[in-house]
Length: 550
Ligand code: AMP
Ligand code: MG
Image 1 (cartoon, rainbow, N blue to C red):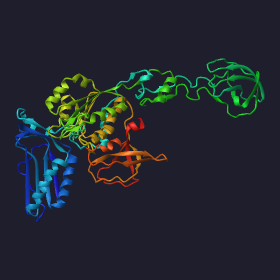
Image 2 (image 1 turned 60 degrees about the vertical axis):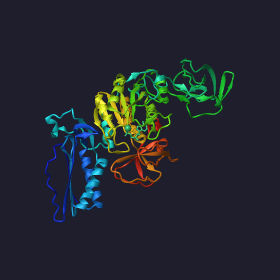
Image 3 (image 1 turned 120 degrees about the horizontal axis):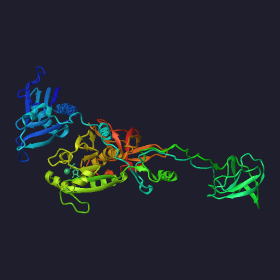
Image 4 (image 1 turned 180 degrees about the horizontal axis):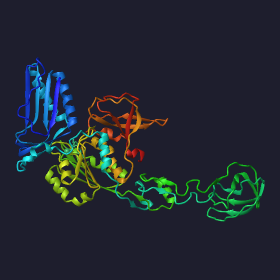
């Protein structure tokens, strides 16, 4: 089948030349979608369409090929306009050639239905009738700013990394530093241990003293500091941790010694010196902890040993999270028919715990104007937040206002869709150092988008390490249909006794499913158009942060 596809921000011509695929065509059927003067019962002056042209073209071609298997046609031409399209002008033109009109009509009808659903071209909004278009708004320069290809997972992550910069560090006492990201490399200010110490309770003697019996000339306890030069035949009683009286010594364990009054006899010779030498653990000036590590209990103990009691660390991040959706009721209420319990608040609050955030949560009414006034009341909170998260309303339904809301708050939208399943309508915006995400409302999409996108932003803002994919093996077959989008598939990770990682794919049918959430501790990356993956296939997976304590 001959296919021609064009995305344009210019008006579509009144007359389009039919494709001429040779002598077998008996019909050339044309369809034009024209922008109507009203939307939702309100008069409008224009509609704005946004698209990812490369992806959209690919999808249109794929759709046409797929449908023509059922309704054989010879050629098809599709022209879709994007940007602001005034009322009365053509938004989409489709021409189909087939042997008889029946096939062409059938293909056209199915194509138009699926175009809306499957192709990344969406209505960004309507211009009200009061908002008349200026003459130059109807021209090619009016393409939306981001109109290139739909972001891949890697592109989206790279964009987040590039746009989120570490917030200034703060100095806090060690008791408040657990889980924070260290923001400066810490070097040892002195040798560790700072002096030669005995590792045993026993007797210090000259290392090369061949005598069997010794006189005990002194006793040292752990806190004593009594330098002296030992002579052959002399021994000093030492405790574990005692600073040795000099150099060139070794310690004989008391278990290997017989003592009578002030004399000892070595009953059994040892080869070990039983000394922890000065600087053996750490040399003065050596780097101990690099900037960017998350401080765990051991790291704090090390800092304490070094006397570094006010490390420079990441600040607590201020996060504001709003849910949207009139169908939601609090989880302690019984939903009426059509309602569901709200679960994203506790999901997000719990996921944020790993990043030491001060979280403020709320709910927005599902009406743009009411949502704006609800926000207005807490505007300073939002303006001070390092991260703003809005659950739901991220796609292109009539009530989906997350994107305009973020724009109204002054965020530059970096991307608003990614080529991912689940989680395609993910919005990412920035405003100076502040970051915002519009997360698709379904809990599974939330979960996935949090772990690769929000976690990357939080790691960046903290100055830490962003989540990375690791390599593992499927413990079972991953049963899937080929999907044009890359997938992050919830999985349960288990360690094999030999130390390798096995991933059990969890069942989910769509992004509204929540059953898999409780068991998921990894996301397996399934390439676009892959379909099923056999047992034992090597896969990339994202370990979920809480699991590794990263
Ligand atoms: P939306 O992204 O707003 O179109 O929402 C997509 C789906 O996710 C809808 O079925 C919503 O009911 C559901 N949803 C949205 N927000 C929440 C939430 N906070 N808790 C549970 N489900 C939600
Ligand atoms: Mg919603």
